[in-house]
Image (tube, rainbow, N blue to C red):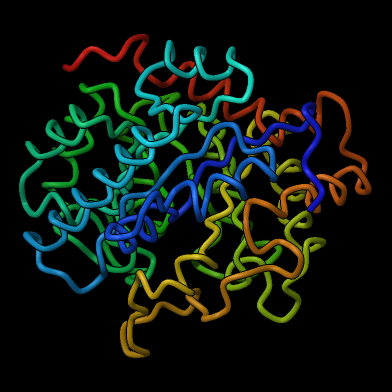
Length: 344
């Protein structure tokens, strides 16, 4: 396996690896066995790790599942001296300044685990969660997801949650929201601390899961970013190719500039094979959610060198390449994370 050069380090804004680690909690050192090598082979220095509850669970079970994934992250850090949990800008700088070190950032994918209690966001914050997504597969008490497009947006409780997250200094992830929730959140949320961790461009692939040009422009105006995802369902189910991933990236760069685009792969191959997440039935599955988990030659983080070479072939090099691979997200998180990791 070709290893990514030192100059092409990766900051990935979304991975479901904690689903698999929690699923394999009874096995010895699951992070080292299944994820550490692929991340190192791909040159991934910083990985944002989603905390995801199954789509059909009641709040108490969703909370239990999410806590289990946090524990899986803590275990990965405890068992691997080269891995750190990043909770602050200071922690991010420390990881980046230490050769061979990798950093994990905890992110809540969807707010189902909060039930109806915005106060639980404080508990997650003190456990190290720094990014909060409002929705995932379907509507919850806080917001409508893309499956409800074009229904309502933020609920009254959702507006309270946004205000609380703003006060905490949390990053707000707008991935999986429908258009109404997206614009409601941008209007109310914290400037410079909102992004779409993993998505694509609607102009390239006409899916509600992807962003329109108007959404891209509004996100950039608020100091936000788009992480380009790498799933066929959003990129192009008919042509699941790296070239189509770069088509989305090119379009986003054309619309909002080179400094507002990064990577948010949403790699799920390992999760799918482990049976760690249940797929929703057809009656509940949004149109964007396909069954194929991987782009050809880009099935996991170990394949990032293939993407790097393809980006170079498309004309990305030097600072432009570094900006896409890591520089933009490093700058965003350095500014958005709290300076230190003191509980608040």
